[in-house]
Image (cartoon, rainbow, N blue to C red; front, side, top):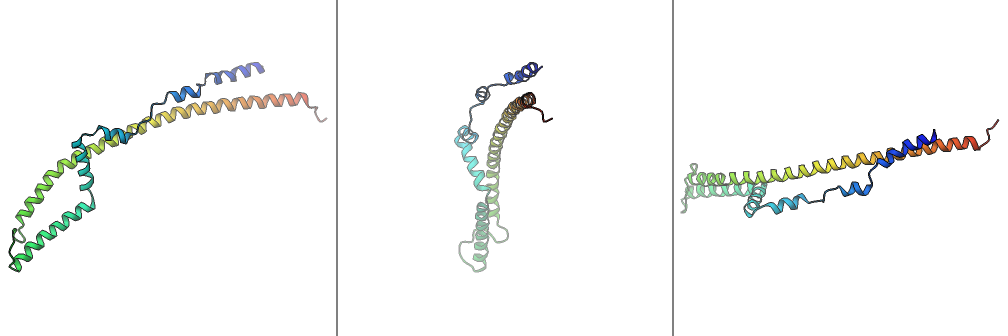
Length: 172
């Protein structure tokens, strides 16, 4: 009977994969950020730079200050009869034209940059998914090793209890 127990508990242990085999199945580690950076053309780098820098409070403040300066100069220059009024106050036709040109040119460029950032996010998510799958497989193997070790310890405890029962005199 004890031989059957040891044979049945030994078979799961022999079915366990060697640690070297488990580690050997790992894919080489790649830095997704470097991989994405290497895949970019010069135009895509420019689009990303523009997207990152235009979407800041600093750029907003530059545009705000430029607008205030433009409108203030034209308003004050006309009121004080100074030379150099180039845009009639409260109409600001030139300013509207220039600001619309900026928006028309930057909008598609920002969209390209956002698409590139989205591609990078997808690459990271895919890498994280594969890493999670690998971790799950390895954790399952680790749990099997723990289970086999637990069974072996239980079997040893039973054998020890049997030996103690036969070897030690009973206190009668």
